[in-house]
Length: 410
Image 1 (cartoon, helix red, strand yellow):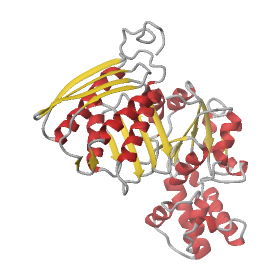
Image 2 (cartoon, one colour):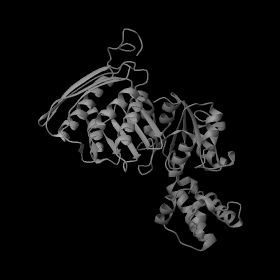
Image 3 (cartoon, helix red, strand yellow):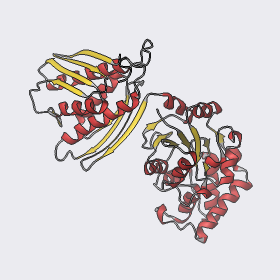
Image 4 (spheres, one colour):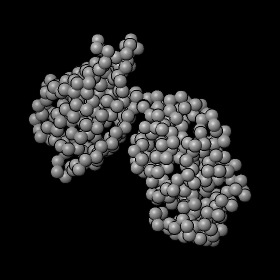
């Protein structure tokens, strides 16, 4: 994946602060509001959009606030909560309970591919203290954007844009763990990697130490929005065949899952479309996004096999797929479905999907159902064949020097 700046959050990403901050929140709320709060109370409050830092969470729990955008951070009440939190955190040395999550070899691997920066809601002195073992080897203090460095906080884009500007970067990958982090990345036009499975992201990883593998992977994420559809997708070419498809068209989701499974691609594709009209826009635009995902993940196509084909049966149906990743963008499609739809999928839109994919990916794609009776079987055999053919074409061939073309380019 091409990226010239990787931005990491501290809390929940680089450092486990669950014990120290939870204790500081509990004691701060007890001190200013004489309330007892539980870990479950804290977790529920943190799930509310806008809960950007633990001072806000402490204030909300103390005073019953639920709209974080309405909090007056210049008020005396907010200052009391903040002072109580900081007094507890520092006087009791709760920071000693923090546990470093990121490994030095992880930072070294990221730094070998991109610049490193930090965007955090911590005060600068606490941020520098947490990262002292990695400064200046991996992090320049100038590229640590802390609470005091920007007039706005996440989910506004300014903190992330400030890091991007200071680094002189063009493409940014932001690693976080909250909805606010995800929204900040979106607002700043950055790709987002979540270390939390329940936070929407371009890519989800088990923890920050998996980020170097993602950077090394042939992967891409794409978002596209029109008046008819809103689509977000990601793909990892050298995957395990894991997929998540949510298009609003059940049978189409099934076909996409079959494609990913038999192509060994890790695929995520979420579509919000005007299916109340029909499924045409959603299906065709999904093909556009999927094509762009593959074009981006393939990069300059160095070392790939380029060609792939598959002949796949499903019960009485037999389907052929052949592909050349030649950058041209043509489709030859032969399939005669005997019914207008399978489930909610209109069968005539299958051609539109593949045509959009071929144009956007830049490939010559040949698809044919040789014979079949059941439209479900015919369509599924076609998508499985498509997956196997793409898998073969995308695979790295160690015998290919440069690109597989006598022209020297594709």
